[in-house]
Length: 387
Image (tube, rainbow, N blue to C red):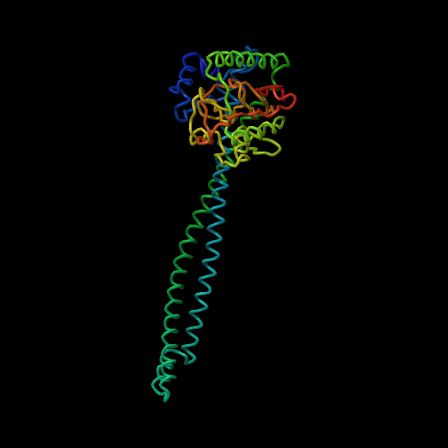
């Protein structure tokens, strides 16, 4: 999600004191995932006759809530994928166990029939006693012992197969129940996203062209101010190169510029914010978590003073937006509905911090940034009037 979402709601997010905390590693950039304060849309003032600032606050809040819901949907979808795979694995194991159990029952049935038909140990033992050929008797004895061992082994296998099948049947029922629960959670999260986006659409429908232009202009001005403050601090100064993997992730992200934002999308035709970052790093051969919250929670933090191209820049107190650092104070991001993958100022959103998917990666001695396509920086970072 792009724009300066929550700059009005979370006053002073990039003010000097907060920014110094991020730069020194004592503020949000070095903290764990922070709680996000949710403001219900109905608690915000109506749009009729409101000032641009009030409208911006209302719209930003709706967009923020939509992206929070999107990342919750992504998390539920990932959990459902993992559980579905686990359910399939257990089902396959259960099928194999039932097949082994059926074979064990067949073997037990054959032994029972042999005994009933007079080919049991007793008949063989009598034959041994009555034989006149000692060598034949010894051969028969060995055959009897082997048959006894085979029967004992078959019965043991049958008992083990029964225990395994029972355990897997129980696990299969639990896995299926878990899968159904996660599917319901996914449905609820999907409905939540749709509800939030419908609220955005309703609000936008009430605004005139002049109001929309005023919103975009005000937010651009906020972004420009925050960008000047960040770059003026000198924290991003110096030549920085990515690792080999980071360079490949960045090249992938640049190739996606111009593709539309779509919540829950992981490419190749559309992306949401974390769908873009996870796919970019997957293209470099490194799997990272799917959601922005998990990327922030699990990947190693890096201070902005050490930020290098390819690192992930995370935004908002709840870590609900993420972008790839391009270098030179710019990021590649999938902003939010109504916008497209593009290059934006790093301060287009309130910064939380940065993480590095390849902490052991060695920076390249030299790096030529990927050539940006025409119009890479054009269009709205905020998604207000379409791309």
